[in-house]
Length: 136
Image (tube, rainbow, N blue to C red; front, side, top):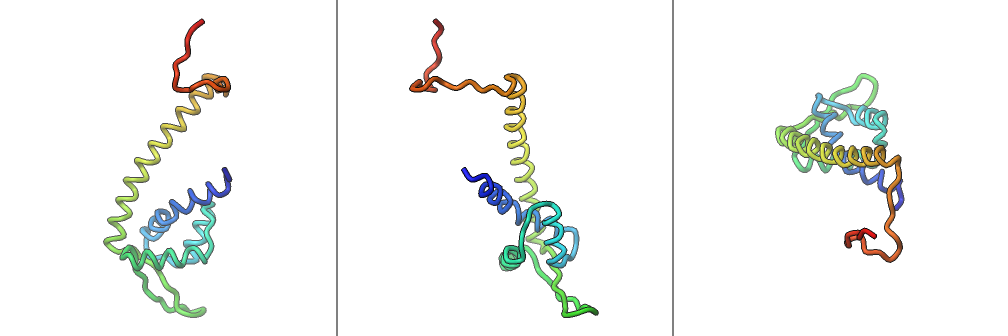
């Protein structure tokens, strides 16, 4: 298993959720989103962010408005729609449930490691792991 690929896939899976959270705080400019995502080590590039923002807008989750800038061209600021806020609430519920489930599994693994000093017994070669052990 390629650990880097797994990490990228995990980050992609929560990117939309994180973007909606950032926008939920108020109108936000795309470069500010990039900055926050990078600081949070979600590592996203413009080539990933802009198509995702377009997809979220087309899905009705967010909208944008143009704001004139004194130092250059107008800027596009993103904001959540009512549908976006409802979707974010549902995602929050799912995240909490998923987070609790994953943390439960990880916690049990950590407890197991502590109880066995990190040792995990391995079944002898050729043995059936579904067959109960017999005492001698």
